[in-house]
Image (cartoon, rainbow, N blue to C red):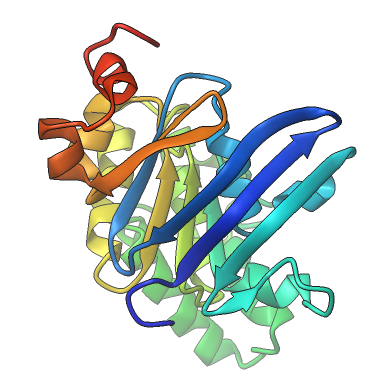
Length: 253
């Protein structure tokens, strides 16, 4: 990982057709912290997150300008191998998307693709990442059961284990608790706060209380513009821009 700024964004603009979803964003994401991207609906939060691992490539009519540097390498450069870039990043979506296979095979899926075949080593890998995701004790006796049998909250933690099993450097979360009940949300939040010791975490959230609980760094977007960013304690206590203050106090939503 590249020092204290694993991700550097330079003059990033994203267009859906003629509409600018992001406008000239420049930003450094701090290492081994939780960065929360906040802002009203439709302000570009998810677009910014998806720009970090080139998931925008899957959307028709999108044009990206500027640079996104991951470990100093522009991921939009002409000779970039997208699969290698995405391997550096685990992704938690709004709704957990388990694979149609067993709990065990969900976690083993990525390591197998990358060449891990020995059963004993796969067993250790599956157990390790289920423990990291806080799920092992709940599923250890039914690893061969379909992942679809798990509760939604358990499925989200299984997706976290699956993402970590390919040994990424960065964890991206697109409102990762929005489909969960309060208890499951707390479980995921707790895991993310523990994981920041070893990973850089970037998460979109529409819940300000959640951002206050878990974020070390805040990125505030409004109408596609980067309005303010900085340490969470500073942004929440003394926002510099009146638009940030209005959003934090509920005047704009």
